Length: 342
Image (tube, rainbow, N blue to C red; front, side, top):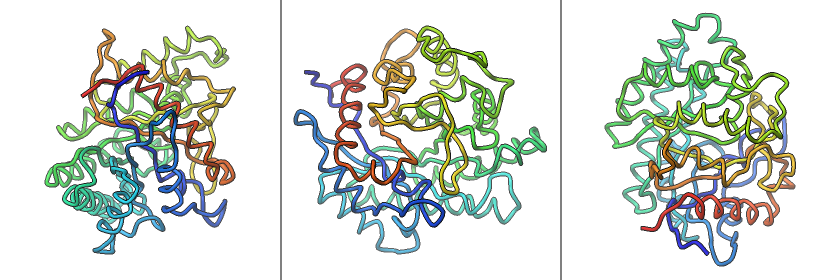
């Protein structure tokens, strides 16, 4: 058995929130997700930590004692905290002046929360995740001008984050304007031009880049592609990862069946499948290597942890302990194949 202990293996809390709520199923409580994560075990290996969505009702950023409460809960279960999702959607990176100010303010609150967790000893690594909080349709009304405005907002957010020693990672999802294709994503990151901006790759969401959803002009796989053709899929993945890997500072392990999906109020994006889904297009352990290794096959060691992301599953799936054991098993295989010992 592999003795690799890096990258650390994290679960995520936001799947208990994303796509849930009044127009879908009930939110899964933070404490329930924490307990199921801590209980997961495969051949004596357990999760090392959690990545957290700083979203209500899980997290109240206006409570001055919230970081202490969360730190105590994580420590009780012997879990570290890694990357944080900033709740920037009350604003918009290409919105009005007030909306852009709200966006940056939420990044500030998130970075302050992250610093508190560091000071409390439960967070040693990780980034703060952002997106444009703007739809593809709205962006398309003025692609050049809107991308420039998003980049300017991101620059302001980066400057705020730098004051807390934080890096911001923009997640590649087809539902966010200026981030909905691999080429637009690279263009945006280059335009932001800050040392503390990077890319958060998600194996499910980012795979949709190869298929040209919402950006057919940047499609790599043909429209009628056979997704069971592994050589075609691998070639497409190589094109995307070669472009985005140099920017990648955070990584989500995930499965995808090549379709889009949304639930509740969440726009459609790459469908997350269960780790054991027989319809999954990806070979999880193999395809993670496109992100974790460079073009020569050498480990990049660009981040100290990896996180599972599986949003918009029914609560019946997410409240089953076997689901989390299966996820952990998939994560272990990734670390066995592409990890290291330190």
